[in-house]
Image 1 (cartoon, one colour):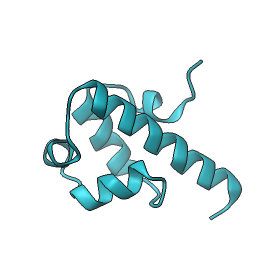
Image 2 (cartoon, helix red, strand yellow):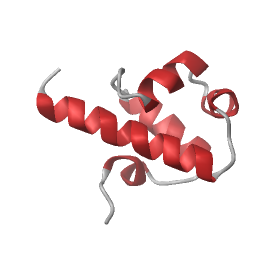
Image 3 (cartoon, rainbow, N blue to C red):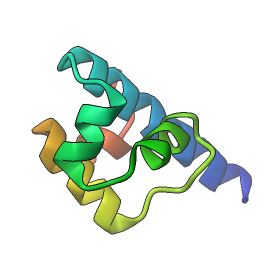
Length: 75
C-alpha cells in the first residue's frame, strides 16, 4: 500500500469507529446493518483493510451519514 492509501484507510477506519461508537453500535450490529462481515469491520477500523466503494456506501447508509463524512477529514 502507498503512504496515501494507508493514511486514507486509517482515516476511514477511525471515522467508522467514531461514528459506530457514537451510535452505540457494536461491530457485530454494524456488520448486520451494513452486510459487511464483523471481521471485515474490525480490519477496516484498524486500517488493515482497504474499504471498497460498495462497502463505503453500505457503511454510510448503516451509520446514517454521507459517504463524504467517512472520507473527508473534519476539523
